[in-house]
Amino acid sequence: MNIGANVVIDTILDIVQTFRSTQMEPLQKASKLLSKSLLEGGVIHVFGAGHSRTFGMEMCGRAGGLVPLNLVGLEDISRIDNRIGINLVDLEREPKTAHDLLDLHDVRKEDSIIIVSNSGRNGAPNELAIESKRRGLSVIAVTSLLHSTNSDSRHPSGKKLYEIADIVIDNCCPYGDVLLEIPGISEKTGSASTVVGVFIAQALTVEIIAEYVQEGRIPPVYISANVDGGDEHNRKLQEKYEHRNITY
Image (cartoon, rainbow, N blue to C red):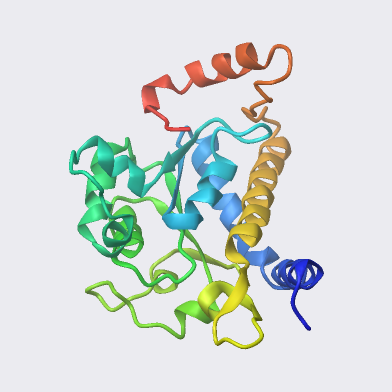
């Protein structure tokens, strides 16, 4: 039976290796754009809906990560909408959500934004890319090209995320984001995009820090709040960016 823990681990690692062998060029180009924003005083905003939010959580407010990164998510809408049981799926499909999010966050033309959407088809992330570009931000997409090119857009423009962004990083994940056949039924199991996304998030973080080092600048890097002196170190760095109202 070709299903089990070892099989799914091997399959996901194969995807990671495919990513590594095919996506280093766009990842490095993205890192240069993103580091330029930070080195010139801007902020990197990171958006992901559903499980793609994990990508932002891996980059923002994390030990070893950079301080001037702002986490943007559908959950933020609860700040301006008091309805009970907000449906995040509906919010992700609604283009207006992008404008509500941009109104909530301090977004400036010197900033960049990473938009993570495995399918690349939904209204909110695609509108977020369009509106961010209109405001002068560099837009980096992390998406599955295999899924996106085999799906119709849900955005009124008919465009998918990879057709809007300045730089596209393909997570190399399959259509439907599942890997293994389950004997006896048509459904599959073993999702890949979240795990691969974490690899990409860490790779981007380290590449951006490498740009700081190359420029002879000291990167504003968090240390763990669970080591001695961590709170003090992190608080001093956060104070430098208080004027940007960053969400960690």
